[in-house]
Amino acid sequence: MATALPIAPDSADPTFDELLAARPALSLHARDGLLVEEVPLARIAAEYGTPTWVYSAGTLRRRFRALKAALEGAGLQASIHYATKANDNQAVLRVLRAEGAGADIVSAGELRATMAAGIPAGETVFSGVGKTLEEIRFALTQGIFQLNAESVEEIDMISAVASEMGVKAPVSLRVNPDVDARTHAKITTGKAENKFGIAYDDALPLYTRMASLPGIRPIGIATHIGSQITDGMSAYRAAYARLAEMVHALRAHNLPVERVDCGGGLGIPYRDEVAPTPEALAGAIKATLGGLGIPVMLEPGRWLVGPAGFLLASVVLQKRGAARRFLVLDAAMNDLLRPAMYEAWHGIVPVSPLARTAALSSADIVGPVCESGDTFAKGRLMPEMVPGDLVAILDAGAYGAVMSSTYNARPLAAEVLVDGARAALVRVRQTHEDLLASQRLPEWLAG
Ligand SMILES: *Cc1c(COP(=O)(O)O)cnc(C)c1O
Image (cartoon, rainbow, N blue to C red):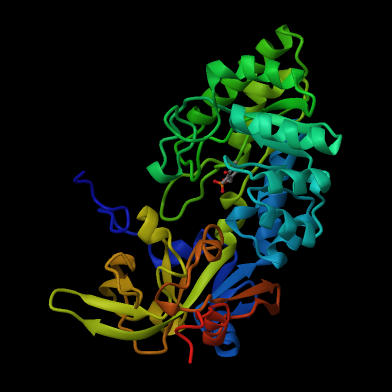
């Protein structure tokens, strides 16, 4: 396909000032440069080094409250189950828990993480197409609120494990509504050809079967149509209308439906996308599912944490190539994979206050990893930069640190939480020793 990469789109990029104006966690101080809340990023770099993930607790709280208020404002009885896979840092989980968040998890590891952060299993949904027997057993032992089942095979596995334990597993059926969320192909999940959920037409017979199994208590239906949805509410409305239709069909067959799980997917503006508001989402839920008289659940990830995170990086050097200028950072695709994996556009802003008055010219912003895909941005207007200058990569709170790898033997970066004027290390930077520590040599090679 000969389409322009979103990483270097044709229309003019937002300016530094426009990027900051749309991100209340950020401000520019005349002497200290870019601040996250009240903490200068230069101070975080001096104290903890780079690359470092920086999270704004105030932004997490503000966004959770805005979503909650929108749902309440629409008169919905709704619970918010934060999609832990977007960012599973313990400090982030605790800030959201203090606001009242439950969790949506996709592995036993995430269940351990959310429980460690004080989120009870009794407020946690377990999603995913491949839960193992051990994971199902662990979740049931902990008293999981709901398992979202995605296949007939999985339903039989859950029933077998639960029966053996002498319990009935609370199971919701994840229905694939066959709608196109019109987001990136790698993150659309609600079309018939995707691996997720049960085909719409199979849901009624399968739910009937669930009700007959000894280890299953059918409690409702769920969907999740994709991630980074910015294309208005039409896909959501279509999906939720189909869920409402399904609830009516189940009730007509005297099958119990206690609640409906609306999934996540609400997008955020990375560049200049017009992302739907929580009020619009609440309105779409109200219009489609509001008349059923049962509670709804939401599983937002990116919308809550994306704008609350920044990847702070240093310029290693500025390279003048034959055709272009490159800013080589000490952060790379192994830290933030989104540009390489989804051709995602992220705002990148110099930390120094002087950068605001400097002349700007086009530059490609890249990492040091040995892959051409290790490119954060192409053709950005940036000032001249020298080694040690700092930049902040914006909106990196979701699907950032959690997707990091140690490719090129690069240790995982540190994570710092900012809360007002306070900053604290919430994940220690990995060391080279850590990378080697888990490796073993067979005896015939040692020595
Ligand atoms: C990933 C995922 C979410 C969260 O998606 P966001 O786009 O981050 O809101 C919610 N539910 C399920 C089942 C998921 O897989």
